[in-house]
Length: 92
Image (cartoon, helix red, strand yellow):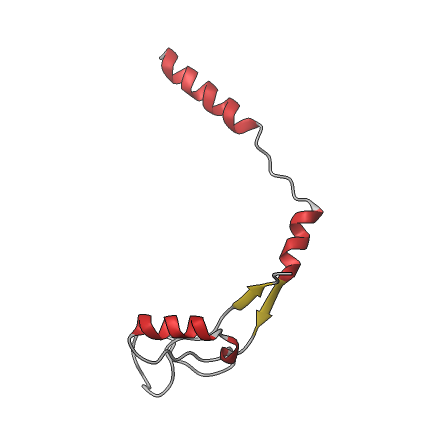
């Protein structure tokens, strides 16, 4: 019984002093991301990797284009993936 109380006491002490504070420096880091909206913005190297992983030509629709949203292929001529987020971090 003493071991359980000792373990709980140690756990309580180890968790009590760890508060994460948000600073202006943390907020400024998120401003350095550049967001892209079109599939043409995918870097060539990433496109080549995606082609190799899919074992065929990687097809993706832009955010405003029609795509097969389910695993049931309703139309083979449209992609089954849609670009949701493409961003790079500013390296300056």
